Amino acid sequence: MQQRAKRVTAHVVTMLALAAAACTTTTGSPADANTARVFIDGREIPTTFTVDCTQLSWLWTIETLPKEPGFTAIIQTGGTVEPKVMRIRDLTGFTGAAQAEATDATASIEGTAFHLSGTAHGSFADRPTKPADVHFRIEAHC
Image (cartoon, rainbow, N blue to C red):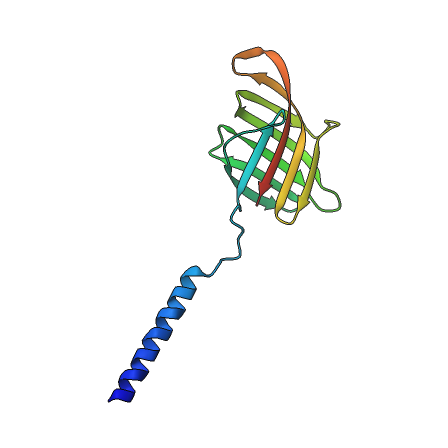
């Protein structure tokens, strides 16, 4: 009877240890997955944005959730990595866009991180009729 009690106790301890290990096992996703940091004119916006990353063929779309304030970026991957569209919505009061033709627009990928930068043309909410340019930099982890 004592032997049986020891075996049952050993099994219970083993099962508890396995259950505890299963609860602490990592899923393989980095802690910053599906997030983005945004810099406008060299200043980091003090919000870490949640992003939705979707891929269709060689095009990636990265969009903040919720959409405002936030951004939408479309990046072409494949042989080269190129920014195609960058739309900024009410970030630090600025709304505007950078098109693929912009000479200073760049994009790169490191693992699951997308890096975008360039100049966006638009306006600030407090001066909507006055054109403005901002330099943006985005680090999005998909």
